Image 1 (cartoon, rainbow, N blue to C red):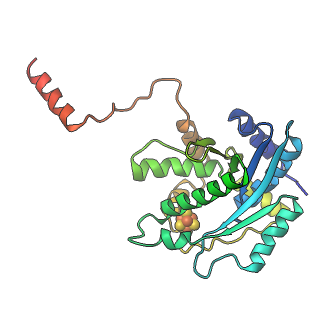
Image 2 (image 1 turned 120 degrees about the vertical axis):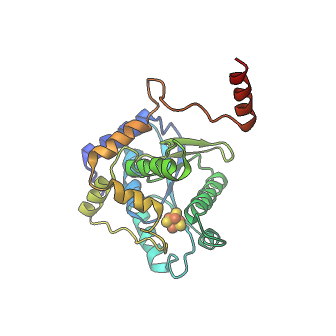
Image 3 (image 1 turned 45 degrees about the vertical axis):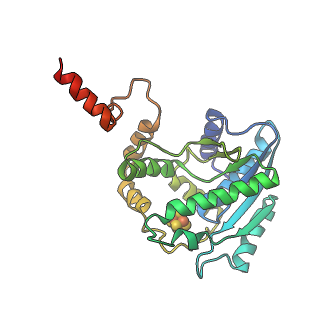
Length: 259
Ligand code: SF4
Protein backbone atom coordinates (compact mmCIF):
# COMPACT_ATOMS: atom_id res chain seq x y z
CA UNK A 1 0.00 0.00 0.00
CA UNK A 2 2.68 2.52 1.03
CA UNK A 3 5.50 2.12 -1.46
CA UNK A 4 7.82 5.13 -1.40
CA UNK A 5 11.33 5.01 -2.82
CA UNK A 6 13.69 4.73 0.19
CA UNK A 7 15.94 7.55 -1.03
CA UNK A 8 12.95 9.87 -1.20
CA UNK A 9 11.69 8.77 2.19
CA UNK A 10 15.11 9.53 3.68
CA UNK A 11 14.79 13.05 2.27
CA UNK A 12 11.46 13.37 4.08
CA UNK A 13 13.06 12.11 7.30
CA UNK A 14 15.90 14.59 6.93
CA UNK A 15 13.39 17.45 6.67
CA UNK A 16 11.29 16.39 9.63
CA UNK A 17 14.35 15.84 11.85
CA UNK A 18 16.25 18.98 10.76
CA UNK A 19 13.22 21.22 11.20
CA UNK A 20 11.78 19.29 14.16
CA UNK A 21 8.37 18.98 12.51
CA UNK A 22 6.61 16.48 14.76
CA UNK A 23 6.47 15.54 18.39
CA UNK A 24 4.59 13.07 20.58
CA UNK A 25 0.79 13.33 20.42
CA UNK A 26 0.67 15.75 17.51
CA UNK A 27 -2.77 15.92 15.89
CA UNK A 28 -2.03 16.60 12.23
CA UNK A 29 -4.55 17.82 9.67
CA UNK A 30 -3.33 17.13 6.12
CA UNK A 31 -4.37 19.46 3.29
CA UNK A 32 -5.79 17.23 0.53
CA UNK A 33 -6.73 19.01 -2.71
CA UNK A 34 -6.41 15.84 -4.79
CA UNK A 35 -3.43 17.27 -6.71
CA UNK A 36 -0.24 15.24 -6.98
CA UNK A 37 1.57 16.79 -4.01
CA UNK A 38 -1.27 16.25 -1.55
CA UNK A 39 -1.92 12.67 -2.74
CA UNK A 40 1.74 11.90 -2.17
CA UNK A 41 1.78 13.68 1.18
CA UNK A 42 -0.97 11.40 2.46
CA UNK A 43 1.14 8.34 1.62
CA UNK A 44 4.15 9.89 3.36
CA UNK A 45 2.18 10.81 6.48
CA UNK A 46 0.73 7.32 6.70
CA UNK A 47 4.22 5.85 6.61
CA UNK A 48 5.42 8.37 9.20
CA UNK A 49 2.50 7.48 11.46
CA UNK A 50 3.75 3.88 11.42
CA UNK A 51 7.48 4.58 11.69
CA UNK A 52 7.86 7.56 14.00
CA UNK A 53 8.94 6.56 17.51
CA UNK A 54 5.93 8.37 19.01
CA UNK A 55 2.17 8.66 18.42
CA UNK A 56 0.65 11.12 15.94
CA UNK A 57 -2.99 11.33 14.93
CA UNK A 58 -3.88 12.01 11.27
CA UNK A 59 -6.86 13.35 9.35
CA UNK A 60 -7.23 14.95 5.91
CA UNK A 61 -9.20 18.04 4.92
CA UNK A 62 -10.35 18.99 1.42
CA UNK A 63 -11.38 22.61 0.94
CA UNK A 64 -13.55 23.17 -2.14
CA UNK A 65 -12.71 26.67 -3.39
CA UNK A 66 -16.02 26.87 -5.30
CA UNK A 67 -14.79 27.46 -8.87
CA UNK A 68 -17.70 27.74 -11.30
CA UNK A 69 -18.14 24.40 -13.01
CA UNK A 70 -15.11 23.12 -11.14
CA UNK A 71 -16.41 22.32 -7.69
CA UNK A 72 -15.85 18.88 -6.33
CA UNK A 73 -18.61 16.72 -7.79
CA UNK A 74 -19.90 13.74 -5.83
CA UNK A 75 -17.79 11.37 -7.92
CA UNK A 76 -14.56 13.27 -7.26
CA UNK A 77 -15.37 13.56 -3.62
CA UNK A 78 -16.00 9.85 -3.41
CA UNK A 79 -12.63 9.26 -5.08
CA UNK A 80 -10.89 11.32 -2.35
CA UNK A 81 -12.91 9.65 0.40
CA UNK A 82 -12.01 6.20 -0.90
CA UNK A 83 -8.36 7.19 -1.11
CA UNK A 84 -8.39 8.25 2.55
CA UNK A 85 -10.36 5.19 3.58
CA UNK A 86 -7.81 2.99 1.83
CA UNK A 87 -5.09 4.62 3.94
CA UNK A 88 -7.28 4.53 7.04
CA UNK A 89 -7.17 8.32 7.44
CA UNK A 90 -10.41 10.17 8.36
CA UNK A 91 -11.47 12.63 5.65
CA UNK A 92 -13.28 15.96 6.07
CA UNK A 93 -14.67 18.21 3.38
CA UNK A 94 -15.69 21.90 3.39
CA UNK A 95 -17.38 23.79 0.56
CA UNK A 96 -16.50 27.51 0.32
CA UNK A 97 -16.94 30.52 -1.99
CA UNK A 98 -13.26 31.51 -1.85
CA UNK A 99 -12.92 31.63 -5.67
CA UNK A 100 -15.68 34.25 -5.88
CA UNK A 101 -13.81 36.52 -3.41
CA UNK A 102 -10.43 35.90 -5.03
CA UNK A 103 -11.58 36.98 -8.49
CA UNK A 104 -13.77 39.88 -7.44
CA UNK A 105 -12.68 43.53 -7.91
CA UNK A 106 -9.66 44.19 -10.12
CA UNK A 107 -8.62 40.54 -9.61
CA UNK A 108 -4.97 41.62 -9.80
CA UNK A 109 -3.70 39.11 -7.29
CA UNK A 110 -6.26 36.31 -6.91
CA UNK A 111 -3.64 33.82 -5.71
CA UNK A 112 -2.79 35.87 -2.60
CA UNK A 113 -6.49 36.16 -1.61
CA UNK A 114 -7.19 32.54 -2.48
CA UNK A 115 -4.23 31.21 -0.43
CA UNK A 116 -5.04 33.51 2.49
CA UNK A 117 -8.67 32.37 2.78
CA UNK A 118 -7.88 28.71 2.16
CA UNK A 119 -5.31 28.83 4.99
CA UNK A 120 -7.82 30.64 7.22
CA UNK A 121 -10.51 27.99 6.59
CA UNK A 122 -8.06 25.20 7.36
CA UNK A 123 -6.79 26.89 10.53
CA UNK A 124 -10.31 27.51 11.83
CA UNK A 125 -11.29 23.91 11.20
CA UNK A 126 -8.06 22.65 12.83
CA UNK A 127 -8.67 24.81 15.90
CA UNK A 128 -12.29 23.73 16.25
CA UNK A 129 -11.50 20.03 15.82
CA UNK A 130 -8.46 19.98 18.12
CA UNK A 131 -5.60 19.67 15.60
CA UNK A 132 -2.36 21.46 16.49
CA UNK A 133 -0.58 21.05 13.12
CA UNK A 134 -1.48 21.41 9.45
CA UNK A 135 0.67 19.47 6.99
CA UNK A 136 0.93 20.86 3.45
CA UNK A 137 2.41 19.20 0.36
CA UNK A 138 4.86 21.92 -0.69
CA UNK A 139 8.20 20.70 -2.04
CA UNK A 140 11.55 22.32 -2.69
CA UNK A 141 10.55 23.60 -6.17
CA UNK A 142 7.62 25.43 -4.52
CA UNK A 143 9.99 27.01 -1.98
CA UNK A 144 12.41 28.15 -4.72
CA UNK A 145 9.55 29.56 -6.83
CA UNK A 146 8.21 31.46 -3.80
CA UNK A 147 11.69 32.84 -3.11
CA UNK A 148 11.99 34.15 -6.69
CA UNK A 149 8.39 35.44 -6.74
CA UNK A 150 9.11 37.49 -3.62
CA UNK A 151 12.38 38.75 -5.05
CA UNK A 152 11.06 39.61 -8.54
CA UNK A 153 7.59 40.94 -7.69
CA UNK A 154 7.76 42.09 -4.04
CA UNK A 155 11.41 43.15 -3.71
CA UNK A 156 11.87 40.91 -0.67
CA UNK A 157 14.23 38.11 0.33
CA UNK A 158 11.64 35.69 1.68
CA UNK A 159 10.63 32.10 1.12
CA UNK A 160 8.33 29.34 2.40
CA UNK A 161 9.37 28.14 5.87
CA UNK A 162 9.49 24.36 6.43
CA UNK A 163 7.81 24.98 9.81
CA UNK A 164 5.77 28.05 10.72
CA UNK A 165 3.91 28.76 13.93
CA UNK A 166 0.89 31.00 13.40
CA UNK A 167 0.36 33.22 16.45
CA UNK A 168 -3.29 34.04 15.81
CA UNK A 169 -4.49 30.45 15.63
CA UNK A 170 -1.67 28.75 17.59
CA UNK A 171 -1.51 26.22 14.73
CA UNK A 172 1.84 25.15 13.26
CA UNK A 173 2.17 24.66 9.51
CA UNK A 174 4.60 21.88 8.55
CA UNK A 175 5.88 20.91 5.10
CA UNK A 176 7.24 17.35 5.27
CA UNK A 177 8.03 17.20 1.49
CA UNK A 178 10.26 20.27 1.61
CA UNK A 179 13.42 18.38 0.51
CA UNK A 180 11.72 16.54 -2.37
CA UNK A 181 11.81 17.69 -5.98
CA UNK A 182 8.52 17.98 -7.85
CA UNK A 183 9.81 15.47 -10.43
CA UNK A 184 10.43 12.92 -7.67
CA UNK A 185 6.82 13.22 -6.50
CA UNK A 186 5.51 12.89 -10.06
CA UNK A 187 7.68 9.84 -10.66
CA UNK A 188 6.48 8.13 -7.45
CA UNK A 189 2.80 8.82 -8.15
CA UNK A 190 2.95 7.44 -11.66
CA UNK A 191 4.76 4.30 -10.38
CA UNK A 192 1.89 3.89 -7.87
CA UNK A 193 -0.66 4.32 -10.66
CA UNK A 194 -2.24 7.29 -8.85
CA UNK A 195 -3.95 9.93 -11.00
CA UNK A 196 -4.02 13.45 -9.53
CA UNK A 197 -7.11 15.63 -10.02
CA UNK A 198 -6.82 18.47 -12.51
CA UNK A 199 -6.96 21.95 -10.96
CA UNK A 200 -10.39 23.55 -11.57
CA UNK A 201 -8.84 27.04 -11.34
CA UNK A 202 -9.26 29.04 -14.59
CA UNK A 203 -5.81 30.67 -14.22
CA UNK A 204 -3.90 27.49 -13.33
CA UNK A 205 -0.76 27.31 -15.47
CA UNK A 206 -0.86 31.02 -16.41
CA UNK A 207 0.20 32.62 -13.12
CA UNK A 208 3.45 34.41 -12.28
CA UNK A 209 4.45 31.20 -10.49
CA UNK A 210 4.08 29.34 -13.81
CA UNK A 211 6.42 31.86 -15.45
CA UNK A 212 9.04 31.23 -12.74
CA UNK A 213 8.52 27.46 -13.03
CA UNK A 214 9.21 27.68 -16.77
CA UNK A 215 12.30 29.83 -16.13
CA UNK A 216 13.71 27.16 -13.78
CA UNK A 217 12.75 24.16 -15.89
CA UNK A 218 15.54 21.78 -16.77
CA UNK A 219 18.41 23.53 -14.95
CA UNK A 220 19.20 21.41 -11.89
CA UNK A 221 22.13 23.59 -10.78
CA UNK A 222 19.94 26.68 -10.80
CA UNK A 223 17.50 25.16 -8.28
CA UNK A 224 20.20 23.84 -5.91
CA UNK A 225 22.10 27.15 -6.03
CA UNK A 226 18.93 29.07 -5.16
CA UNK A 227 18.26 26.65 -2.28
CA UNK A 228 21.74 27.60 -1.00
CA UNK A 229 20.80 31.28 -1.20
CA UNK A 230 17.61 30.65 0.83
CA UNK A 231 19.64 29.62 3.88
CA UNK A 232 20.69 32.08 6.55
CA UNK A 233 24.36 32.64 5.62
CA UNK A 234 27.24 32.00 8.01
CA UNK A 235 28.98 35.11 6.74
CA UNK A 236 27.36 38.56 7.00
CA UNK A 237 24.93 39.33 4.17
CA UNK A 238 26.47 41.55 1.51
CA UNK A 239 23.38 43.68 0.98
CA UNK A 240 22.67 47.39 1.03
CA UNK A 241 21.72 48.81 4.43
CA UNK A 242 18.06 49.44 5.28
CA UNK A 243 16.60 52.31 3.24
CA UNK A 244 16.60 55.54 5.32
CA UNK A 245 13.33 57.46 5.77
CA UNK A 246 12.92 60.90 4.15
CA UNK A 247 13.75 62.86 7.33
CA UNK A 248 16.81 60.68 7.90
CA UNK A 249 18.09 61.50 4.41
CA UNK A 250 17.77 65.25 5.20
CA UNK A 251 19.63 64.67 8.44
CA UNK A 252 22.39 62.85 6.55
CA UNK A 253 22.64 65.77 4.09
CA UNK A 254 22.94 68.28 6.93
CA UNK A 255 25.59 66.24 8.69
CA UNK A 256 27.53 65.71 5.47
CA UNK A 257 27.54 69.40 4.54
CA UNK A 258 28.43 70.63 8.02
CA UNK A 259 31.61 68.54 8.14
S1 SF4 B 1 -3.77 29.36 -9.13
FE1 SF4 B 1 -6.00 29.44 -8.71
S2 SF4 B 1 -6.31 27.90 -7.07
FE2 SF4 B 1 -4.12 28.34 -7.13
S3 SF4 B 1 -3.82 29.99 -5.62
FE3 SF4 B 1 -4.12 30.97 -7.61
S4 SF4 B 1 -6.32 31.43 -7.68
FE4 SF4 B 1 -6.05 29.88 -6.07
